[in-house]
Amino acid sequence: MIRKTDPQGTPAMIRLSELKLPLDHPEDALPALICSTLKISANQLKSFSIYKRSYDARKQKLLLVYIVDVELDSAQLEAQLLAKFSTNSHIRPAPDMVYQLPVKLNEAPAIRPVVIGFGPCGIFAAMMLAQMGFKPIVIERGKQVRERTKDTWGLWRKRILHTESNVQFGEGGAGTFSDGKLYSQIKDPRFLGRKVMTEFVKAGAPEEILLVSKPHIGTFRLVKVVENMREQIIAMGGEIRFQQRVCDFHIEDGHIRGLTIENLKDGGTYELRADHVVLALGHSSRDTFAKLHERGVYMEAKPFSVGFRIEHPQADRPCPPGATRWPPPAGRSDYKLVHHAANGRSVYSFCMCPGGTVVAATSEEHRVVTNGMSQYSRNERNANAGIVVGISPADYPGGPLAGIAFQRKLESNAFVMGGSNYEAPGQLVGDFIAGKASTELGSVEPSYKPGVKMTDLADALPEYAITAMREALPAFGKKIKGFDMHDAVLTGVETRTSSPLKITRGDDFQSLNVKGLYPAGEGASYAGGILSAGVDGIEVAEAVARNLVGV
Image (tube, rainbow, N blue to C red; front, side, top):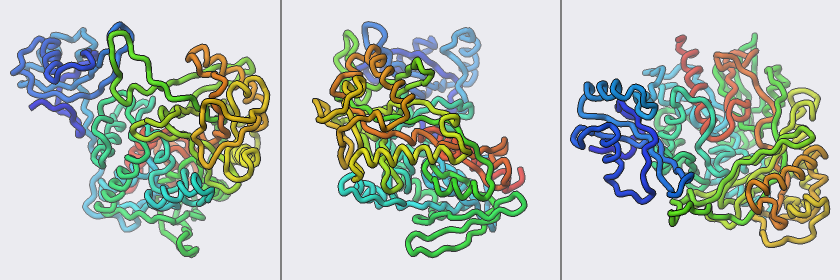
């Protein structure tokens, strides 16, 4: 039987790459190409699975490019062919991508591991611990994802902010209200990214995310996927406590011993015994960072980036000669840009959302923060991306928490510039480059809700950032025609590109000075996106499990 995909991995022995076929090729073309490439008959091909599918538009005809894993009718034949094609870099042994649990318990420990935060990192840490039999306890300050979605829309539509239930806090984490990108540039020799994808598919994500070169899910689909993953964890004995905020850490002799937790439903507090705690906080848990710092947990300031969101009309990617279409959603133009400015600053595009919207993403009152979001269809009228400038601790001296103070200053200023009603300050790109205030919109209607107030963004960021961005936008316009169009809209401010601090850990994944505390994911600066956060959650869960059982 021919397998088109195989979410659980494959027993195949041979991996073929650079198999190219026309966009509209018939179904039997791929197995035929496999046979001709290996010089075997059709009956010798037992099965195959598609590992990756991408596009080649460099020549006159748009092509699909496949990487496939192949199983033949005998191991002997596979070995013979690998020897025959040993010098061919596109015919290699298939790697073993099947994930194996490092530990499996029959009974959970008396003091169960705790995961703080239920974003991508926390979800996968809890999922792996549950699969290994540890029955983890998850503490999440926000609400379940559907309640959280209603609260988030409350800010966008009614200017009502719920400080514990918003784009940053709640089930699914900040990644729920994003483009849902599922690709990363991390090194992944163990194929843990495949495990992340497999779990997403198991929970209801489209199976194609296992195949396409730049997969994404989109917000609405992520909601159901997250709910299904929660139910799987609970079914395996895990416990997830929503609207519970960790307000203190009990550390004795350099080891975590417990947590004080506030029940946000009734305002009461309680103590939870904990010897193994995963910190999957996300990058906006500022009060928790402050408490960890107060308790002496080692952390350090780190570089991050600040800037604006830019919006253009969504353009379809021009088809190469000889092609009549791009398959959706590949037809949506995307980009990745970088410019090194004369003042030494780097300006780059961040979190590009084809056919998406700019969203209000603050978690604190009287502050404005922007982010980008797309649905699976990516069919909104505009494309948007962060255009951000790299900064370092030298720009905000004062210790590990100084970056948070820097962010808050910019966000509070943006709130005032927007009219002190959660509208965001905005400016036309042409006016921004020319250094004059915008008074009205042009042809591009911004998507940010509750609304955009046109102004002069020169006061929204430090001078060095404004100077670098004014230089970068025309440079980007030379790379992508129309990028610096006069009527494109800048909306401010984008400040939460990554965590402004790092909760440093050792090779054992534990805090440098507090045993049993496992900094993880974006908040601790060990991930940057849904996929890498999920991978980090898996690795941290494995470290917790090994420590608990002494292996």
